[in-house]
Image (tube, rainbow, N blue to C red):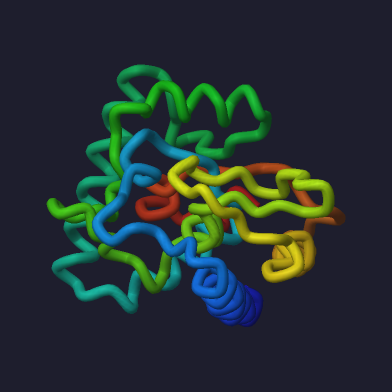
Length: 204
């Protein structure tokens, strides 16, 4: 599993660099100081992202790591009291489950945000955090990844071939599940607070 997680870290860096090149080319970098996408509830991340994030926390300074984990646990406590999430079953298995946690956490910010809106785990952040912002479009302006709406320009798929990145990500997910004894890719996700506080390998 360690080898797969290490390969995923390399994939994340490659994807980030390609996305950075595309945003620079089209003048659509996120505005400095904007963190709205990180402050309006929790979105879903893959189990591979969660396991990578948990592993990569060792690279975060101890005081920062302690702060982020404490905040994540506080948020999970609140969500459990609302019966919106369960540490005993931290997987999101359907689109309605993902939509529900997004709505019921809408007033929560990512536990990794500091008081000024900066990401405390920026180098370890999940894949979607790295490629969200401007909309990515394919032929005939077909939406490949819908952005936050603050941009008047888009990124063409030719400059960021998002399906290639998704396919590479899924190959690594399949390898992870195969390593865990599963015969196929499982369509399950979780949220960042759970990834920060729980060892999700046991749910593979």
